Length: 400
Image (cartoon, rainbow, N blue to C red):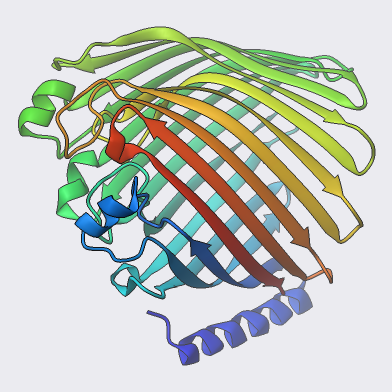
């Protein structure tokens, strides 16, 4: 854990480096510090108080105090931009201190450009944080590491027509042995084209290939779900701005999901997501979304679910310093395989309702304060995967 003395030393170094960078005028260094407190009335997502007591927990709630510090370094050389970021956060639980942990994140991105028409990025990053409890029924402190490398290229063939390619490699690793069968390596490749008119209307076509390997999946789970799967996706992207106040975006694609040497069935179907954003005034905006997507769930052995839902959000800039945002969503998850790494595979279905409200206040150019409230209710055809929780999160941040 981070001691108070270590944190003060790090903060002093960040301040010193920031002033020195500005004086030299060659780089931009943006350090920050953040502190937060979170209260959650059902931290482990138990379906009832009876289930919590049976698992040996007298209380379902807890408070988490977080201390966070980090910085981003921007270096521009001619048309090239290099961005380096690093952060560390210390999380302490008031009641269940066996979950205390230190999270880390760092990465570097090179935004490159050759001439005026060819550009892209190269990046690598690594993040470590504690896994949640929404979809697993073993309560341990499992630190999950996420590694990513990405490369992209864009070519503006014409002022209105762009060709692009993306290669994306990710690696999910779990610290606790019981969760290591969920470790996954993803290799993704995408090719596409975009056409944009002067009015802002955009049409794009793309092909995406994804291969996932589960290196630690053995025994019965490997027999049922396999150790490898592939996705082929062909799609269409749309964006339309009929007026200065209205913007409509959407994506629709066919997707073919296949498991290698597995007993579970493959999947063929449509992915789609539609969004509508409308500005009622200069201070107020509304958003609507609807979707049907095949998505990954990293806490589950089945790994993939068909997620269908809709949502709405509203934002109000009360003043130049004060913003309010509210959202409401409904969702249904249909699982492609087993419901949990600790249960016999069954056809599981979940329905979720989620409401959230956020207040953001920026009293100065460098300081900000956020207050977030979330209420979520999930119903499942497997009783112990149902839950209801409320959380309140207060976060303060200062950017140097």
